[in-house]
Image 1: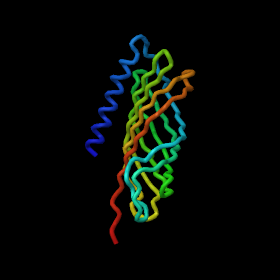
Image 2: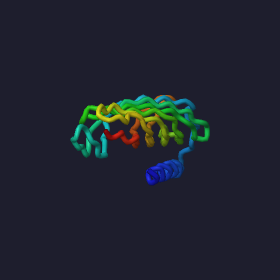
Image 3: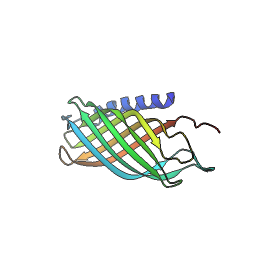
Image 4: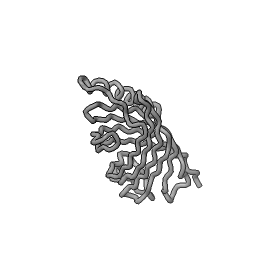
Length: 170
């Protein structure tokens, strides 16, 4: 977990450095202060999980999320992230909601770079475990093209790690 948190800090700091190097000739413009980002799409689960005695190494999933970000003029801000991941193998859901720190960089060419990291509440609907509540660490990195100041389209990479209390043994 310590390595993962270190990686989050490194990604967050490098995205701020990267954002200043991509805009050699572009000026940074004031970002939109309040941003809502609904998202729906496919994902990949890259960890091993256990379901009724079966072991799965990888699985596809569908993610539904809603994010809110409030960004100040300097590009820093805070946000609230809520998401649900439905996994195809095992037919289960993982839920996450939590606050986050945000860094947003927007150029005058309409390119927007956004980095988010946070820690929040995670839950699942695994039927066979007594441990349904836990902690989640959430990181996202997105690159968007803004058609207007308030509407854009882009790609986003998200990573979420959840940790649950070990179920009691009977």
